Image (tube, rainbow, N blue to C red):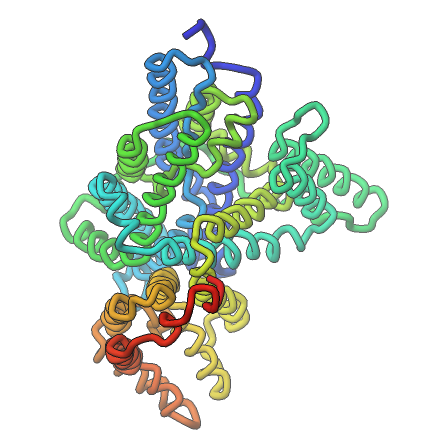
Length: 558
């Protein structure tokens, strides 16, 4: 290997693409948990997230990218080539949209709630943060243990199940929510940045001077925002909304263990809340394992053959390291190694990413970066990520399983519909006519990630003619629905014993004109419905399928 062969000019393009992906994900986390409610006590403070959660989260990127850099150098040295490209690693975007509203915010509410632990706001924020960090450690341990069994997981859970649930999150949350809340809110900036993203990253069209598409989109959006802000003031006519005046955040090292958390009861509460959140996060861990396998295979197709187990083990250990230091977002290899290779990237871009992210987390640079970077300019990259994940879900799934992927999107749409409805209600109880509609949406949205996985897996098995296997998936869904892992009718979507949930539903039913409309969506009803459907599939499996007896040319295309 020749000297400095691990670094090329293309590493600059690759660096900006990788770093902006990671920065966008961290911005998403900040936005999700600091603007969830107009009531200050129902959300995390911006200072707390930037000084406590972000540094540990950044550490996972540092550990993972340093390991992948070393693996690239070792591979180049072993095979005697100078064009080896390092595997890209970063923060997992889909799980960020789950850990914020489905783990961190419920833990904050549990800490402060009347039925919770009665903490003050500061203690409740620490409690929620500790829950998120413990969940990340558990997820990292799970990934590390399961990494050698990645091939088996691909046999047990069809791709339509794992990738279908991601497709729903990608379209409904990763792509649509930023489009709705930030890009469409400032179209002069958002659509310009989005156009650059579509041209450079979706259509793969080179920009003048080979400027990295992600960097060009952000810089153009920032320049338009600043120009619009100036023109708006000069003309006394708003072109863009003024930059938000955030409270000044003073950088301070994260305090992992405040004095009030040094007791057994605290960690018992944290552990219980973290275990209750695992059903939400484990499907994302499985998805990153399968995604890591796919990323390794795509790298091999591009000429760089990495050891799959080492790639997967690295992402698991990086997540453990991040969680142990207060991080809350899991790490994963990014889809797109061939794209980084086509940019001319070698090993320097992952090394530079590790150094930049580490320094920014250590010295608090992210505080200033997040203050000066308009979200309308940064969030179009999330639209690209959402489109890429959704497209990859279909590309990597057999054509006959496309209906299963489409079915997996529906629970995510229910969760999406619930977001503006919850904002409109703003903590108020819906009127009698709307109560049934709201509860139906809550049932479909509760645990939607697990629901999507099980629905898509069941339909994929039906499409393959494996009705008994499909019945097994529905049996798992019946158990999950009985305990509120999926289809919880409660606003908190809490995991609880079915009789406790039914008692709360009876209280709500007394407030509506037709109580049966509320009570017939109890955990007992959902579990019975799945059980009956499973029995039906087992019964149908005893009958021969006439379609299988048709000549091959007469069968419907799959």
